Length: 113
Length: 112
Image (spheres, each protein chain N blue to C red):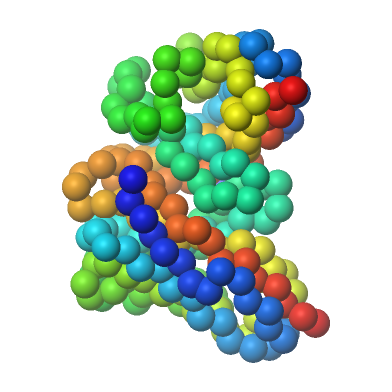
């Protein structure tokens, strides 16, 4: 069964450094998403991406964040200058179409020191 | 953002017992999804509901999309130790936004 994959599984970085989190969505899906989950809290939406552009974003997704689909399979989330409060699990998800079921990857645990 | 209230927050049950949890919102949703999350892993889809009143089963799991479109429940029958985890409801609103709003989660512990 097709799955969303994410790399790396864990990332430790120093405050102020840039990080890039990578995802490979399910191959015939058209919509891609990033969510985050701070330890012990619920999952929160960051951004959705369709047809090579951002379709929706939340208040959390400020100028420090960017997304890109650099090739036909990868979908990346970049945090330009990490802050302590960026420490969280970051989940990539994809859906076949608009307002359809979203399937999640295993997550990247980001720790900012 | 939208508030999805999930209850109970946590449950401790004996193996073999049935479990019921629910999710409510003040807003109308087009889709309700139930996910299970194990520690350090991503949410895994359990059941998807697309129509008001819909009742759907997946093995020992049954979920319903409330008639008002503002609530959903999940039942687990004859619980087993591997049912342990955090169960999240999530929904797509009727506003047409494509982002999922997640509930606060129900932490389930099954005592063998």
